Amino acid sequence: MGALYEAPRKNQYYRCVEAHFEELEGTWEDRYQKEYGYWRPYLLDVIYKYLDCGDLHLSFARVKCDDCNHEYLLPFSCKRRHFCPSCHQKRVVEFGEFLYGEVLKRVPHRQWVFSIPKRLRLYFMYDRRLLAKLSQCAWKVLSVYLKQGVSLDDPNPGVVIAVQTFGDFLNFNPHLHIIATDGCFDKDGGFMVGAVPDASALEGLFRLQVFKMLKKEEKITDFIIENMMGWHHSGFNVYCGKAIWPSDQEGIERLAQYIVRAPISQERLLYIPASESNDCVVRVIYKGKNSGVRETFVALDWLARLVTHIPNRGEQLVRYYGYYSNKSRGMRKKTETDSQAPSLVDSDISKKVFRRNWARLIQKVYHTDPLLCPKCNGFMRIISFIEEEETIKKILLHLDLWMPGNHDPPNLYKEHQYILLQNLPDRLMI
Image 1 (cartoon, rainbow, N blue to C red):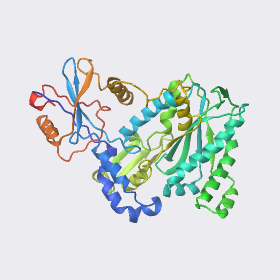
Image 2: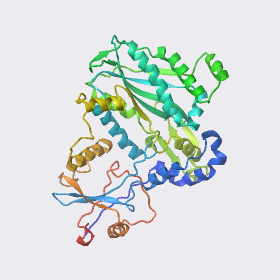
Image 3: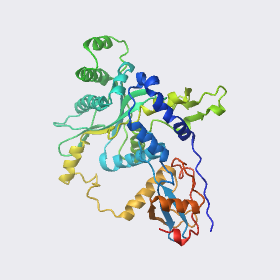
Image 4: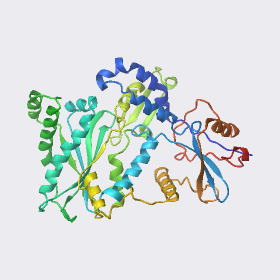
């Protein structure tokens, strides 16, 4: 029998996390608590799951070609958002397809961005509940503005708001990315395009709404509000993009993916371990997304910045308002007046189609089809899930892949590195 395996090289991001996460937890109280708030125990769960993501030693699926019997092992992923780049990217692609196919109507849309001044950002870092209330502030302002731009009796705009907490270099910068209808729906489902918007007209009202919310939450006082109202530049900003027409599916999906993108890009990261540093200090060099500027961080400081952007368990970062709210969509589906947004709940899609959808998603993310046989171009299928420790060890030992304590990130597809299982003995078949 013969088996070929190319172990996925641990990328620089993985090496940085693996080498420093324990030190980060141990030094957090003394070194970072004052700046970033208390250590959240949930962070360790996310980090450990990421370190185990794509590890064959924990569990995997066997995928086999029906035509030539070619096989490979598919490791399971951690599904952790905003920390595991691979798993988060799958969510990003899924969200783009979901938004275009099931939420957004075939009407023009625009991107809006609402941001707040530096002086107020720490309140949202220390109390993440405020992020949801920040979304409500933007919705109140934007909905009033969009309704005024049409001549309907009971106008109803559709809005999707995504919270992002990170700046270009992982500084904590809470702001809102919004996809909103370029106009409003009427009570019968018709749509009227609104007047060309002026984003600057919303800044003052948005500022007042945020001040009102933070004062109600007892975060700021009248003195702070009076002081900030006297600023020459308020620090609040509202941006509005060009209209995206319903025929531009790629543009809508690209925008949807952008508003839920991950905090980091592995391509812009360079990890320098102590052995490669002139002064034995471990560093991370990170390149800005648009500016091209590079900043150098002590690795622990960079990792501390990163974990502040991990959402709490169950924390929602995307919300739907107006015509796109969960309640409105649910009511339309109940009365069968929302035919353009097919319901997943009532879907009778087969398991075979689900598997093909999964394969299509992987292909879209990694530009390769995991269910297309690399040898004969035949159709491959999952034939078993291997989760028992004894069986896992037996298979990996046979293939000379057993490496206790090894953890590798799920970059098998991206690197086009497959685990080939030719002529696997019958006694190991599941």
